[in-house]
Length: 341
Image 1 (cartoon, rainbow, N blue to C red):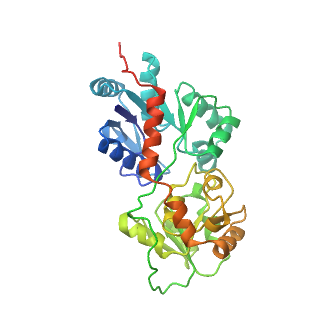
Image 2: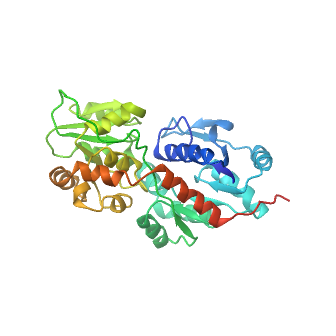
Image 3: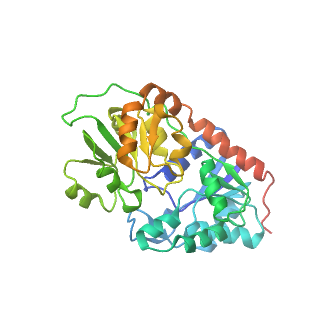
């Protein structure tokens, strides 16, 4: 198949959406499919005020039209509800073309936390954006149920996530000068991730934050006992997981939480809130605990978590299975050649 991806989330951004697409595209190409990407680096743009590493690009409609026509795709998939997503959606709507979408990010909740914009307004925009999609891909049953409750009526298909099991697996823990247990957070250091809730948890040991973002400097000053390591990738990231004793996922605005399954595959129990994402992944006491009070979740996960069982569950999330699911969604949605006349 010839698959065209339109996304506002791309390198050099470091997040789960980019990692998911980069890995899926690699797999698709290995299996003989052709993939073209329309992404922000192809257009002029400006840094986003709250996310300097994210560029708000100014997509040129003529360039988009030429790119799509030259590639001649079988499938057009729109991954994000940003400037590129809207521009490619407009192209498809004007020509009556099939396209699919993904609901990756809870932008309404993000905007409510960052700009105090009522979520109801943003959800109206999101519903209109996805309304003409042939299929909305969602990662979990709880996300689908939430979107249905908010008035999304399009067909939805599951698209889970995967783990690089050559990287993320249990390893011997190294001696450390930091008191144990080591409580780990991996992700963006920003307001909408509720990291301060993690840092306020009353627990013995050391809190470790891997990642960067606009509030890292402030939090490092306010919580001097926590260890802020910045971004880590590859082996360095895998070692951070494997050397920790518990993974804490404080966010209530994510749609899945790729970092949770990386933690599980590394043998780490997970403490989180009972919200979309965690409630689909942390389904038994041996792999973690869910509670609206993170103190309770952390205490229970430390006591009841079983590293061997965590690793077993984490190994079920493979990128091969994830990419087969994605490809099946494309095939079942539309299998004919698109026409541009």
